[in-house]
Image 1 (tube, rainbow, N blue to C red):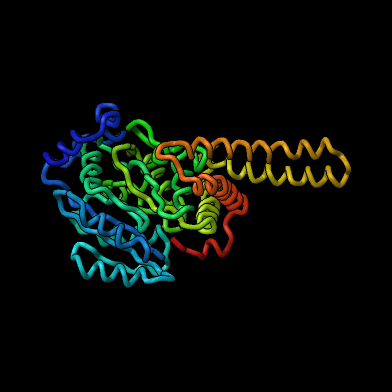
Image 2 (tube, rainbow, N blue to C red; image 1 turned 30 degrees about the horizontal axis):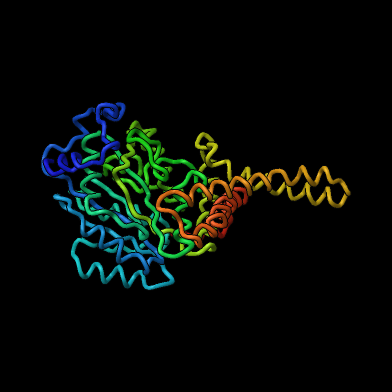
Length: 376
């Protein structure tokens, strides 16, 4: 573990790992959470579908890791509308560390479980990526070191969204600002420490298998739900801001709306199954959608009845929301590096799309089509 110890020594100031404050997972012996021999084998797992544009870059970043131990990449490939399967097959043919498994459902949960099942007997760590991510060269080394030094069952860091088109760059800024999709530490940063969930995550394989892996009945929010079961089983999850993963947002407003619509639908399903998982962060978007709908009815009713006071009352929430979005977007666009003019103009539309699509999906709830559609 000498190489891993040196990696921790390189951690930037302000983001240290603090094993003393973490301690062992409740109910577990510390010795059961340590690797005392060579660095453990790592199985990097991903569920991919319709990722032709990004898969090569994502895979190359995994294969370029400086990790001293054994490493393999398992891609669970679902039905695609592009050449994802052919790209994955070519990548596997070019490097024996890449293994491709068929995921006919396209479901992320099922695909990740299939990929986990293909991990070798010596792979003690499961490290999740996806087709939209790019890892820095020391990511695996740092993640394994964090597991070792904190005794956690899962560790994760920051999603670092980076775009190349106007909408992508605006979406990237929205996703890293509290006004976009909330103030979760893996979006906006924070101090290293215990966390209720981790972004993507590096996990002790034994802990994941002990709780049954990813829930195959969930198409979205499967990672959050796995983290919930790990915590309820007594495991510690750890956030380390030194772990950063580049993420490529959706390229168009339509794609952003589709992504957040589905996420909202599935978040409602998670809360329906377990109401204790509800929080202000998850309930704010549907409350906004319902409030705006009520405002429209008030304005329309007041106008028909010739009651200007009612019309004014109905316009309070929409006006306040628009003003809040514009103020938040001005703050977000002004952060360094500053957004360009085009991105700054598009940013409010991206933020509103995220809020309303997520909230509307939550209000609508799962449809038969959504339950049958396992698009990743």
